[in-house]
Image 1 (cartoon, rainbow, N blue to C red):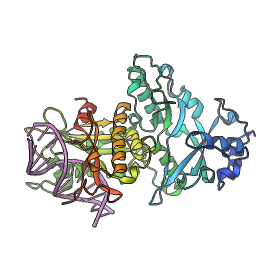
Image 2: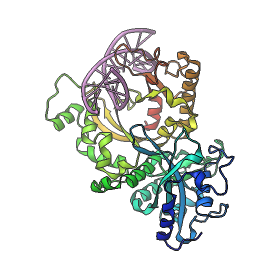
Image 3: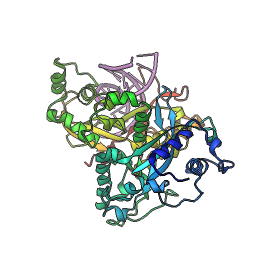
Image 4: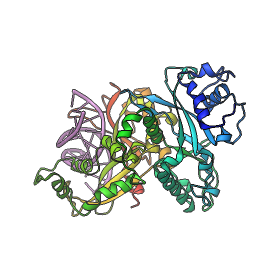
Length: 447
DNA sequence: CTCTGATCATGT
DNA sequence: ACATGATCAGAG
């Protein structure tokens, strides 16, 4: 089937809404296939069954005459009814030897994926793939977010130019990720400015970005009313801008300045958090402040730094649920979380061992996790899985009880009298949280 | 000192 | 009443 105009293509595509995959699978591709092994299968079903293209995968754009690439991707419904993309959208492969001679505008990825027809289906773990419902579609143009994509592209290219392709991480960038793309985890390729063999990677639209454009599509009317700013290229730029006037001041001075109240002896334990909530915004309010926040996943963290430059504490994350550990690491919530999330770390420096409240705003740093970190995190994850299987608290990877060179550990986080470890298996929501070790923080903060 | 389980202040 | 982010505080 050929389409002469975008209009024609979209008009035809409108008929796909409300269909399940089995309804359009005229080539019977779904008959005896497993979705886990063949990730592009649902895309093939749409190509052959709905658009009647022959089964062959050449590298030309799917709708060649219109320069439009077809993408079929899933979303899931959260418990509260909101939608989120199930996965990142993988684009073309990164060629480390060529990227150094490209600009974003001349790049392979923009050449192939500038315009994409994205078909959305609702993923439902209780259903078989053939029964997934296609509910929406959109003609998407990458140049809509050109400024940030361009900046992301330069970040990726910069690492390759530095001979650090093996240190690439999805968290380095805002929207355009460099995700791993390998047949096996030991697969390696070459890079131009280092002998270290990096993992093969592909450009991707990050999971949080996909969630952002999905919500724009579905919630269009409301979003148009509050069209937010697009002033900054990265979250860290935004945060530094908001904190600029307060560097060199103590926590108490800053809090007094922004609240107009006085704090003499009683310092709120969460004073740093009160400050970042006020000056930067609470996580849930940020999407309204800058479009960047609607399409990225990041967390604002506060960290006391000792006089030797090292962090005083580990860094904590959300409490874990037993159900987080039902899948393999590769498909897990936590792998995705650590892979994609950028930590924005607001540093407060101690002077003469100053206690909380009297540390000085000194720096803002960014932490992302690379392949080595994730490999270590995987061990922690698997050990928790094992502990759950065996119902054995002593197997839990606490810092006292973990393995050698552990980077991610668990620690109690309860209310008074709650014995987090003893009660670990009693309910889905545990009283235990992930923490990253001080050792890893030292490494990440380049101390 | 460091380590690690426990606790606090806040927001919902 | 509980989750979160972060610090506290006793043991060694």
